[in-house]
Length: 115
Length: 111
Image 1 (cartoon, chains in turn brown, purple):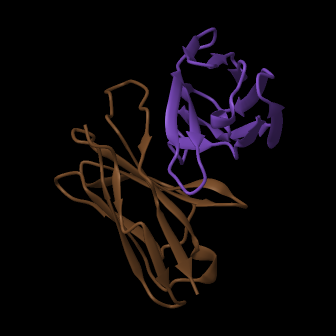
Image 2 (spheres, helix red, strand yellow):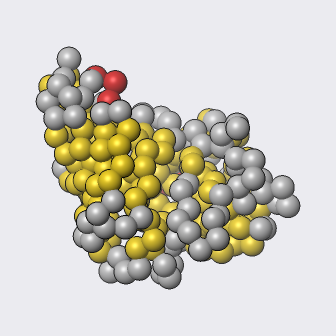
C-alpha cells in the first residue's frame, strides 16, 4: 500500500499571503489529522477529519482551516500568514477501527517558510 | 490537565550501550500509547502501539513497555542508525484533542 502523501513538500510564502496544503491518506483510511511541528512546541494538533466532517479541533486560531473530500483526501488552509506559521505541517491517517485504538501513519510533511 | 512528558530531552550513547527512554502521562481514559521515530526533516515513523498496562512489544533492538502511568522504550545494543528523535503519543477518550504528543527524546548513538 502506498503511504500518506503530502504536497507540496516545500513552500515559501510571504506574510499576509494564504496557503493550501494537500494530503492523500493511505487507501482505506478515513480519518485524517493535521499537526504543526516546530522546534519549540513539538507536534501540535490542528484538527481531525472523518467522513468529510471535522471531528476534533486543536487550539489554533481561525486562520487555520481544513476540509476533507469524499475520497478522504484532505486540504488545510492558512490565511493571512504570519512569521510564526513557519513550521513542518504533518498529515496523518488512521484506519479508524470502531471502538478501538487508532494508530496514525504520518506523511513526509510540508515545510512552510514564511518570509 | 492532560499531559505527556518525555525524558531525557536528549541522550548520547556509545554504540552497544543499552538504555531506556521514558514517557509519562497523566490522562484519563487511556485508549492507546504510541511510539514513533522521527528523522530530521521527515514525518514520524510508527514503531509500536500499546493498549494496556503490562503489555510489551519488541522490534529488533527496541522494546516498549507500558504501566498505568508511564511507558519505556528500551534500546538494546544500539547502532548509529538508531540515532533519531523518539516521540510518544497518547490517545485518550473525551477531551479536546484526540492525540497528545510528547516533545520527544533526541537520541544520538556514537560509533
